Length: 269
Image (cartoon, rainbow, N blue to C red; front, side, top):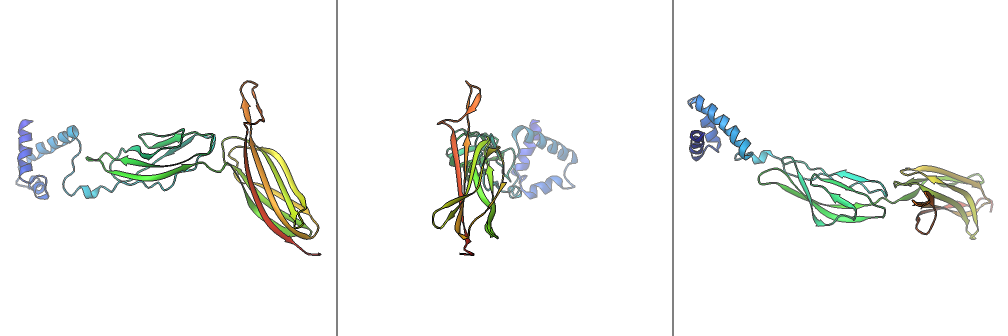
């Protein structure tokens, strides 16, 4: 083994690390037995001391980067898990937080997995650093924002419009959390004089993770100019372990949304 090491050192001194040295090793006039022995010893040395890049080889390894653009939103009461990803360099990668901090209840593992759980709205700006397994390691960093989804969302599905002597429309609601809501929906047509007429009222349980549930409404009204408003209120029930049931109280959470749209209805005035 010592003889092989001396031979490798001699070759290194005679530009073994260059393309000319590589051609010398592979030339037909070079001792085939020594070429085989040197090849085996190189494999052994690489296994013992790690991979070493030959000059010019570094350009063949792509630049390390973090292609993730934005983080998925956090849903209340739902366990959050997202795997950060990197490209280029040499795996495995190692991740760490280097600037600011994550929202309370969240953490970043060395493998790049972002996990957590929250019962309140959160928002946090932070920077991560990823290192690859090159020697020396390549590094990349990127800023991210982690925030919660809006718990309760209402939006128009079909905007209010006049159909004969009626005003009709529909809207869609979403419960973007991990718990059920006790939902109250009130739809009013407010006349330009200030008088309000109910177009619809509903009270029901809006299940967790419900997305874009359609709620239609409509009513016959006297001709006038109206503004149609939709109010949705979701209340999260507090759970009492002592009584073993849900209950309403001062600690229950309210989530609200409101939409309003003009609906001119002047015919016959």
